[in-house]
Length: 507
Image (cartoon, rainbow, N blue to C red; front, side, top):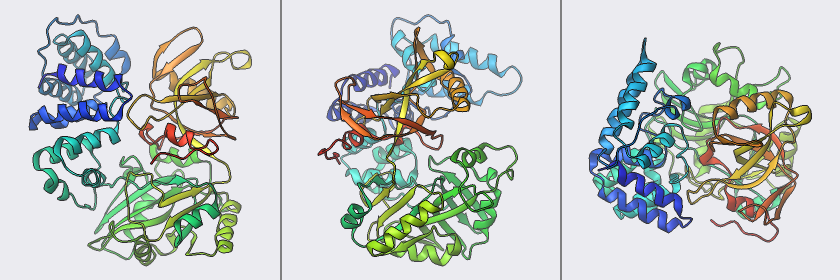
């Protein structure tokens, strides 16, 4: 398959707002791909090369001075091989060797292909075919039910591998994916609730738990081998030895637990979220101890529990995790549920989670079976630009341009701006980080790659013709950046519109 075919499909997908048109274009390309390049094709289209980071930064890629060829002849296999060679280059003189390899690759590409490769290698392509659209395209290309594709993706954790299996073996190959201890499962997500009474009324028999201001973790144990993953499935085992030791001491031989971890003060109150996240990249693994709180059990001693009701998973959790189970109440009365909220808030936490006890574990889906209740409403938005500061903030990048995720795979949809809530420390940090991912700039605004997620507190939303989504944030304030979240997990534009009075979120 020629790279030009992938580029043409990417352009077509980015040019339309129609989800059906995106799925049609992607599924047609997948059907025409040979088995050996399917993984690379899907990786290219979702904007993440198979090799991940290849060791060539934005400056290296954009400073390549190579003229394009006039006719397309570069194949997907050749590009994949070249990127593998770049990623494998290390040692003395590796920077120059990487540059030489990229020059050779770009010298064989047309102008359109060079533009595609630049955006692929610098993270700017992550907008045209996000996970949900690609999953639908895989289902359409293989005539396999969408739920079968989604479940396989949940269990494999990798979209390209899911596509390879679907195109090679159809439904039977996808159904062969099982939970594997040691391989992370995509986490189940929650939707915001209007209020605690609304959540209790909608879900019926439920559990109400503390919603912690921590970092999501998933731990796997097989015998004495323990592995710990973040919500984005990144392994952090080496940086959290206290969690490894704790899980190794649980009364079981194998287990997969879902939970949160956070750093606590001597009084048992949560430390700032940034302190918890700093541990995941710490040089001294014991410089700040983390405490885990588990809320789900997906496997225990050889038995997979994904497809049993939460009620049964919680019973298994209590048997294995004991005192490390997150505080809460099972099937509480309204008064008991309110008491859980009060206890969570008085302990310094965010609110509560309300979960239907008959619900199965639906990874990667933000359904209604799990609902979060918080006294202050927040959104996880994507930073898409920032204005240069003036006055006291001169020299900093200050006023943030905020975008909501387009669930149909388009670029983030701008819904507002804010500079409120930014401390001098955060201004310094964001100025450095946003300059590093800048894509273009003018006298006033710096446009950036849509990859940093920021939690925004707001008083509500209102109808607006100022922004393309037809809605604007009211009194938006920065709470914190969310390095534990990917832009694909940001709040969607439909969820933002759902905050309008009388508006219903599209499922």
